[in-house]
Amino acid sequence: MPELPEVEILVRHLNPVLRGRTIREAVVHRAKSVRPDTAERFVAGMVRAKILQVRRRAKYLLFDLETRSKTPTLLLGHLGMTGRMYVQPARASLPKHAAVSLRLNRGVFVFEDTRYFGRMTLDASSLEKLGPEPLCDQFNGHVLHKGLRKCSQPIKTKLLDQGLLAGVGNIYASEALWHARISPRKLSRRLSSTQCDRLAECIRAVLRKAIEAGSTMPLDFSGGGTGDGLFYYGSTSETVGHEENLNVYDREGEPCSRCKGMIRRIVQANRSTFYCPQCQRG
Ligand SMILES: [Zn+2]
Image (cartoon, rainbow, N blue to C red; front, side):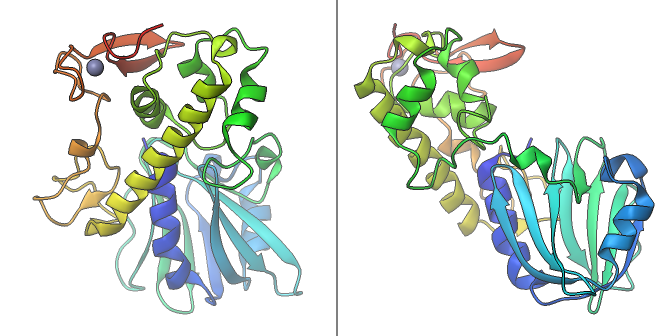
């Protein structure tokens, strides 16, 4: 499932490709993918709009549009579990699971989604409840400590709360806790301010490192690829992978690279958590 680093990488790829292009025609191939908009309203909002830029907020792609009547409009994209967004040549045929396609003045933007959990919509209300961006200056240990003060959920579960912090998902929550040497089972309100400072720094560091890793890989945004490891996009080369950058995620039974203890997998709030019980105590 794509997380913040993958969305950031995709935005960095799409922005220069889409900036300044005009949407000639919009086709909704699957009505569910533009909900709560109707296909008609979505198409009406898109046609002849100009794409000013593509940005990211949490795991959302934000397309800043300017409509025919010069009205600024925000189009939200979310990859869900299996979504892909890319530009293909005008004459190429659309993939089987195309959910939305936008014919541009050059090329066709495709939103493809095999499991249909992703979205493209003009309804921006889901942005309202989001907490701070982990990579922005507004986020630090103090903000985290304040957010956790009254919470009796385990810290790993709470880190996935997008109102606390926007964009941290299952992989990087486990990784950041390992780096900070904090047990994923520790109750959120029991974290000291020193631990919160360390955790905030580790969250930023794991996300930055993943973005950096993704930026240096030759990626295939339209395909699954074979050498992609745990990085969401297909790699165009089989020799590189992101997997080796992860210390605990999906490494149950392997030795911890820090203390040689054995990595465990537990289930918290129906999600897998990976950690080292030996160096993440408490
Ligand atoms: Zn360990």
